[in-house]
Image (cartoon, rainbow, N blue to C red; front, side, top):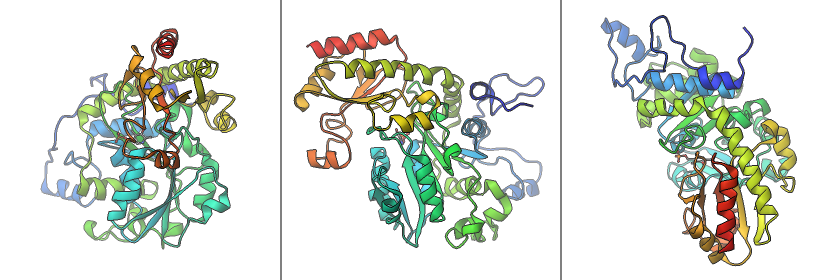
Length: 426
Ligand SMILES: *Cc1c(COP(=O)(O)O)cnc(C)c1O
């Protein structure tokens, strides 16, 4: 059969009912699963056979949704997590332990930055941050003998820098480590990082994938392409016997499924950040329309960005799909139809207060922490998510004090622009 297109995968992948089964993916709202014999269940605990026994590790609804996301990204295996933060943490912790080090782009989501810079450090895992636009030579200097991964965000939230995935993949592979990419903002509709050499992709499904701001969740997808055995000295956790499973070695027992199996069998078992099956069901409803919503978000955002760029009270506009963006060429190369996401950032002429006055006068666009859902929303990071930082620290983090993050929804774009216009006029 011909490989199905991404639109079909959004609607149908992950679940194919058999004769007489429900047409809609069912919610398996059960913590536990029944077996006929003690031995049947014992084999599951030893990972000798696959199956469900306890929802803290795996649940059929979650697995169907994860399989859909794996299909969308072109990966071999995936798992859902309770949040995007849990996905970021597991993606690194699955290959790093105390004494290890990893390298990350400095322009990443604020929550991820704090996880890497502060919390991972407390676990004995050190992160070096690099300017993603620096040269390969410059970024390579951050690598050490104990470096285990390279991390970046396809389109950074809120800075909107675009990651050169091929460059990052070359650097990672030259140093024998996987490239892990947070693909939350473009979603697989606009970018599939595996096609440019990324090894692992993570998502905050909370954003466009759910798309309706109803449930927090995350996902980790493995391309199956990283050869753990070829770098076994660096990744004993994947290639050496695991004493908590009677000496089983993931790379030998599960091949291309090694990374996700280890993350499930070890990290999910011990740390328990499973997504609720109810939330996985809601996430799947979002995924069914992802291919319809994302292009609309992008069309509207393009018009909003062009409107802002032409407006006299606007000091600057940053949108990777604008010709004036320094990431325009990269966006054309990496993204479907050059479309990036629905998020536009800009600054107004005047001081910080001007941004606050503008936001307070918006009527249709709401002030919320959230980003990337159907409803247009807006945030001033300097007053909200990043309010602990001084102006100097904000600039160092790439977040200008006047930066307004405008998340363009799927309403009629003329209504969105009219709202901006009346708020600017006040
Ligand atoms: C929101 C977000 C996260 C964290 O996701 P949560 O579901 O809020 O934990 C990670 N990465 C990016 C790019 C995000 O926008």
